[in-house]
Length: 495
Image (cartoon, rainbow, N blue to C red; front, side):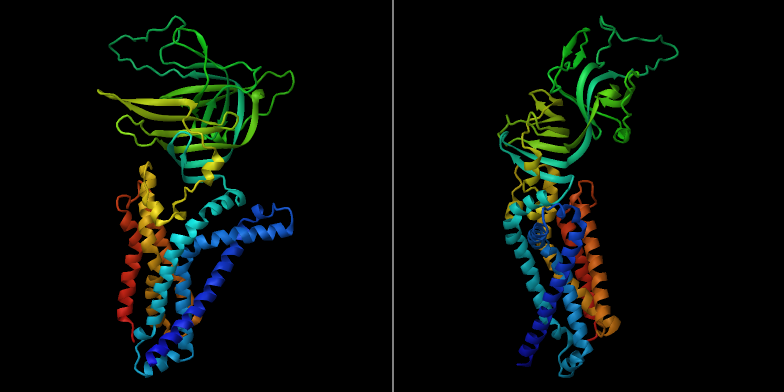
């Protein structure tokens, strides 16, 4: 009878502190997050709309973060509850009737197990149900310019697209009158042999050289995309062929030098002043090219959308199925509703495998950036069943999903593991008599766990990480380490 009453008393005492700590952590998060995103919230039309948007935004975001909050809240509630029981000598009374401290805190660990189950259920059922609206709210309510690991089906092309990084609002320059020339490579000659010159074409141009004139393009990040000028009065870009003939071309993509993004555009020259020529360097097929344009022919552009790294995977269809397309860079053209990109794939024949390079032409990808952002590409918003579906996904995304899958089982147990470490530390160091010391210990233990968990996840999800080949170990390592430490400390605790 005493055991049942004691269990109910300590269990309800813990639950009461858990609710208070949860409210405190949530309120603190909402306040900090509101101030961090104040520039986005303040754009509302009125004070009522401002407050309403804050409530709606966090009403969808807080449930998605509850599973991450639960271990810290459980730890705080446990140590504060035990410290208060010790402060009023209730633990001494419990020990006086022959009940050990291990038995006394058992109801708290039972509640921690229930919290772990609640966190897993929240992540499995509530978060996926809120995911579509949550993604829309993120897109509307935040001013993010960079998105990582986006994955979505492109139904028009019956393919799955994975984007390593999407720059959503990059500034750039619209240029006219661009000229591109290959830079000559130095030829090494031996001392004993005469110089051998490449056979020139009738125009004097060597095979493989690049010469473009009157081109129009967009320069964004480290990429220059040459494309048709929307102004019909502007001359069409031309390229010089190996036979010395100028022929019109449509698209081309040239990566520029690394410091090109910090290049300062000169001011427009005064009327009657000679034009100032601007030259930057670029690369093409491993060779160096020189890009020239007039300073009076550029226009500043903002909010350009650029994909940097990705993969387009066609559906499986047997041996005749097309190979995946690996995207280096792709620029969204809203006028034509297409992506211009530099990408490569391969074509397999009976005798060999040939590489195929898309050099600035439109890619077989039509999903606009806004829909790509709104896609449910974030694995943390998916249920366990949805994460198990890995059809037509690139290896990097599949590896990340495997770590998250194991983490769905391992991370909720952190509520029990952290309490297992903090309780004996509280008694061994301070006798369980100081609430403030208990809170300090709880914060230190939780910070250590979250830090180790972050490093472990990073080492497992990164293809070059130390735990890239062991997704299960990456997810379970923090739980195993802190669980073993807690078991040792509990065994040494003086009861």
